[in-house]
Image (cartoon, rainbow, N blue to C red; front, side, top):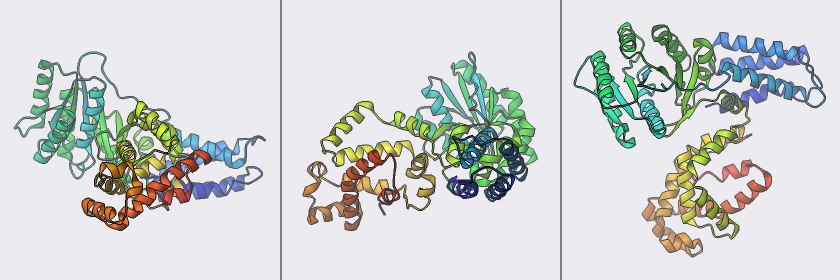
Amino acid sequence: MFEDLSLKLDTALKKVIGQGRLTEKNISDSLREIRRVLLDADVNYKVAKEFIEKVTSKALGKEVIASISPGQLITKIIFDELVDLLGGEKSELKINASGITTIMVVGLQGSGKTTFCAKLAKRLKESRRKVLLVAADVYRPAAIEQLKQLADKIGINVFSINESDARKTVKDALKFASQQKFDTLIFDTAGRLHVDEEMMKEVADIKEIVNPTEILFIVDAMTGQDAVNSAKTFNETVDFDGIVLTKLDGDARGGAALSIRSVVGKSIKFVSNGEKLDSLEVFHPDRLASRIMGKGDVISLVEKAQQSFDERQAEQLEEKLKKNKFDFDDFLKQIKVIKKMGSLSSLLGMVPGMSSQIRNAQIDDNALVKVEAIINSMTIKERRNPKILNGNRRKRIARGSGTSIQDVNRMLKQFSQMQKMIGRISGKGGFSQSSLKNLNFN
């Protein structure tokens, strides 16, 4: 989402990079451009104005010491202000030490509420909580069915009744949870296509009945300033505790993410980067600010890798690479691990210095599916010894995988280049643009 914003900020900062000292003129020129960049990204006008005023005030009052350049100093000031704009520190989800924890999820229809409820339930179940999902959207049968289907995938119970009154549903759910010793309830409330009086009255009534430990407002980051406006209305009605940004893997400009915390005064607690039920992350303001500044997010990348990689398998893979025995079975295992971690573009965006490069590289997140199909169409012997893949074998593999011979040849070339690329990456400490182009399986 933030690739365009990151690139434009980098361009604007070049006005002071290389300057001998910070002056009122070069600061003014650079920040005028940054203000325009923020407004182009759909950042709230008042938020952008206050941000620039704070940066200007700090920059003009700073002395440039010999060990750093003016560009480094202004970059550090902007980074610090971005972190502050996004909330300063991560905000934890409130969990009651004893008794039942009740979490009420609110937002407009289509914002990703129901999917988020399942993602959060999965996360809390992994923390040894006994979770019950409550289908409090009584207006859309599809919403209840969607919640049940998602819950089945993660082994979570769903409470629903054949009743058109959401207030009765939540009352009965509280009684049921107490009887069955559930310690965590997540209420998936109804959304509308727009804010209306009836909707606001219902969520206010549900809040009074449930007395929630936490109320989370779901924001579709793709909707820009409309998301900020609806957040203000919901906050005035239910005084929610935190914000969840969904669809951060989309191509929105990022204005909602940068504006909403400042406008509403509530912390962003989670971000969602896809439809998979494990694509939910605790929000870290400093990490997102680092990505926006084009510095990547190495900590999150390492955390994702630690969650996905098996240490013993990693050691075995390292030994194979050293002995040049890396085969297609190993390749397939690594593809599955990478798919668990998220989309290729999101992972590469966490690598320092990559945001501007992936902008011009054609990275197809569906390409791995095609590669898997090709490898799965090989025999065990072919996977372990790619050198035997002659023309006839390649034709058979193409037919079996539903791809073309050109696709098979391209993938084989990619595979042969992989070991060389690993050597280059480890030697140079990063990716080159040419390495990126090799990631394109199209």
